[in-house]
Image (cartoon, rainbow, N blue to C red; front, side, top):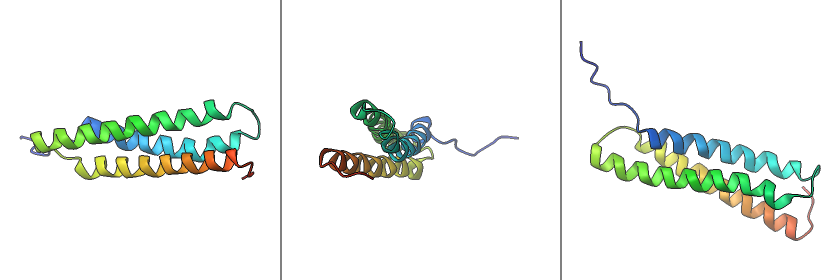
Amino acid sequence: MENDKKKYDGFAVASFSLGIIGLLFGIIFPIATFFTNNYYIIILIPFIFSVISITFGLVSKNKIKKTKSNGKKIATTGIVISIISLLLIIFNIYLYLNGIDI
């Protein structure tokens, strides 16, 4: 009995997962600034996750076009979540530089 289901592209799943992690860290880490003064190190971690997620999502979408595998929607969702995370990071930096407490 052959299994004809196509598997999801690994880069698409990685993009989605890293996007979720980047978004969660983007929400949680600014709260941690109340406990430490290393704001730029704290905001760097979700930035790295988001950039890697966008990269994996774009690689996945190109790979899916060539191989006709599944995961295009997952890759797109990972990219969108990562862009939202980056916008949240930029907003947090703006708030920090203007001295506005959350």
